[in-house]
Image (cartoon, rainbow, N blue to C red):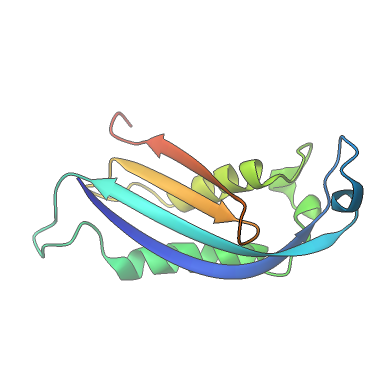
Length: 128
């Protein structure tokens, strides 16, 4: 299997709901780092798993939506605690929304909210 990854950083704000998490219940910002990893078994005719430029464009469009935003105010977070877990899945869904990328069997989004805390969301695309 081949895996290609692209990373970006951005800042977004949120506040947690539904529990008593002290300062996390107040609006605050995180410097997020997101990594999208695409996995597949075969390369295209150029010897690439996927065109890195296409991955960069998809990821940059997603980041532009969230950069400097208050996540709680966005419709995709309606009724959800804007946890890093939900955020990673939402980024995964946004990344896959434009359509299938040939040769790719799974996509993983790893999202850091600090130097020590991250979450990963992966889904298999081979049966889709």
